[in-house]
Image (cartoon, rainbow, N blue to C red; front, side, top):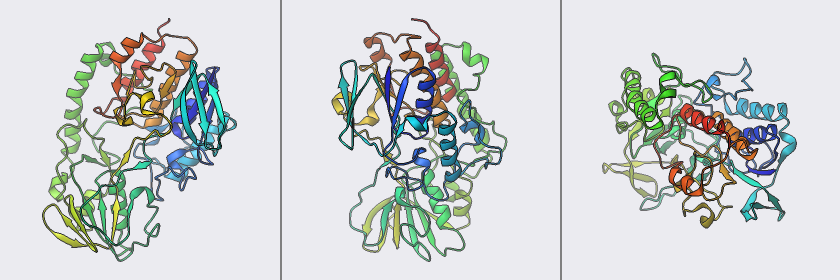
Length: 429
């Protein structure tokens, strides 16, 4: 069986490796010239949002593959250079590189017989028995529209590399719009003492902000780690309900020792910790508390060289960086095929398989409390077992009934997702 995989980033690499180990003929289509996806700075695919100071928010133990650990000399939270090198080492170690077609952007994929026909940017068409989409969801930038117009440099965080690229941001008043991970990290970097900047951070809504190492908190697990006994034996609905009841209490014990966002002028964090993925940043709250960053509310309007905020205050600004996130885009798949006009509304059986197209899969598209690619490895094992005939899917009607939103859904527990996949894969047809 031949399987096409779109993307040779972290999820695509582990999918290709896992499926080939399962005896399937898997091929990765990669728009760029290197493996590693988002972790390759200035990736020629045009899809990377990496900046020079980028590093992981999850430690080496949480971020490893089950059969490929990080070198001992790596930082506990590796930067983009180490991550890109590690993914390339992974691809070389397991012979994946020879099955990656570089500079091959998929521009169209549609059903063909029982499988799919793939068309790449060079006009080449090829048929496969199954299709796995593993191209990520952090590349199609979202930029808000505000009344008025700003005449200075204004760009999305995807294009930020460092204080000198794509624009020189020294001795400037810089506004960063957005309280996500990128916005906080960029604001902290630009507020460095040697740059001479005045930095403002605009937040429309609150975020839970945690340090990378939370004193007194448990170490988050890896998706492949054993699930505690009680959560294994409970029915799924009871397991999930118990976790939703316990997790906020555990989190409250950690956050109770930390500075609250509202104490420095930011909006309060959501009461429900499952609504948003937490921001992981060691310095932003301290920087605001000490005046190196000024917290500001949402933007109301733009002026030629100033910004008006929701509280009516107008501030002179030299440059604006929009750290306002990304939309999930799948330009090579039609809305009719997906079953929704907006891919963010996609619903999948087990969070992996399209309910109406049993050989169309999505890997690494998940809102979860973990590092994504270790969960992608577990998803790929499920796909491999399915395509090998080790278990059978339920009926299309049942798949439709049990299909779950993958993005418009509360944050998921990675170990539970991995356990559910492994249990189904263990059932014989």
